Length: 259
Image 1 (cartoon, rainbow, N blue to C red):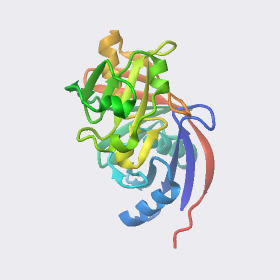
Image 2 (image 1 turned 45 degrees about the horizontal axis):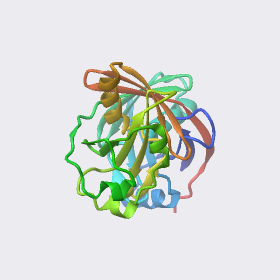
Image 3 (image 1 turned 60 degrees about the vertical axis):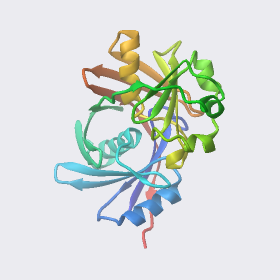
Image 4 (image 1 turned 180 degrees about the vertical axis):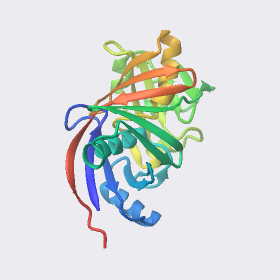
């Protein structure tokens, strides 16, 4: 089976989020896809199979399947655009989280998806123990997210992942602050999925982009994810939709030996 490793939401190798992309000729069992993802150890491994004029796309962390992952969608788009269908300007995916369309323009990939709603969250008593800092504001969406004072605070937090796993709400935890050279910064943690820190997270910006668009009174935003590998994204908010644009870089092309 053809296999690619792609660094996503970056234009430089060894930064952004590395993602495994498996190109299926025949369907695999869920158990085998989970084994491959566990062996790869990336935050997500994507499995791509041609389905008529679109592509079926599934995502597995090292511990479980997830319905929606934008950095792996970007990685799959890069592989299709560079190796499977170089003439494609628009790529359609069917995922367990719904349909996605990606527009390709050289090495820029623009993913159109729905914005996530969010609401204020009552203060969580143990959050200072979990984050090592008391946030200014707290919100709940698909993930919990917390507003901090500065990019430096976002950069310096050292979460307690064992305690974070015990939070009853939220798939993950996001911390964010207004940027200096960018509109906003963030870091993202998903220990419930076996991923302590995600290096570049497209889906978190379905929450953060609408939040910061409202705060900053602008629809086009430049975002920086302050993970150890860093990642750059451009987000545009239009009513209830978000388009997230990023680049990608190929690290490896090879084969997985399936018995």
